[in-house]
Image (cartoon, rainbow, N blue to C red; front, side):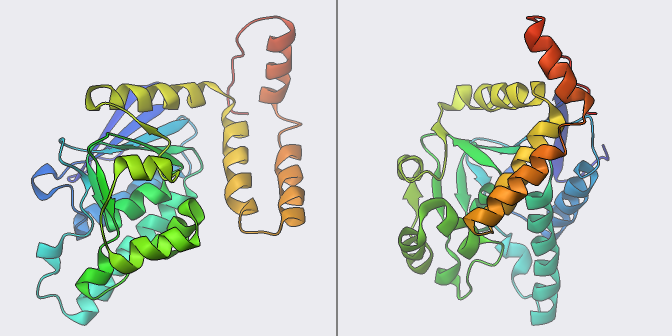
Length: 262
């Protein structure tokens, strides 16, 4: 992996990567450099056969990510603002396209683009004190990195409209009740919980995990019958793999499978 200025990349287990947004003094706000580095990282992971799962978190205890760095944006021309946002857009799209699961370990507040980053992950664990918001309408803009699309898919249209149109923050308990986060975990246990889940996923057959993730993502954009057909196509690509043969052998031999991703 490349070295980054605003990200901390750590190999925790042989197939588990931890990515930390590393601007704690700025509440891990997303500036232009972080946008470029995240875009580069997700691009690296597109072809990373040795990574089975990723945990994304923020440095410190205050914030997961406070959204875009408004101090950097202060005084930007319209053209510069839009050029920067194009980098951000590409980073969010690239995160959605990462083939292995990405788990958000939300260590603190996730506002605006920070919440959108969490939404672009496959699922999330959060500390009970975390707060969430899409505050863009209070600043004269609107969510522009997937918030108007991903939030309704997570919590439903009517609740998403209330969250986005008011810009009001909501609690981790509400996020959990609404299905926005999967689990609330004490701060001292958050990373262990996220890494344990990532490790468990990474122990499964990597091609199967990636195909299942792709089927869920793509199928949700289709009608039900088309989704079924896409699922079968994804399934059939796994039948001739060595991992499929190894999984069946291991089951019958009553041992743990040794998957190799081929």
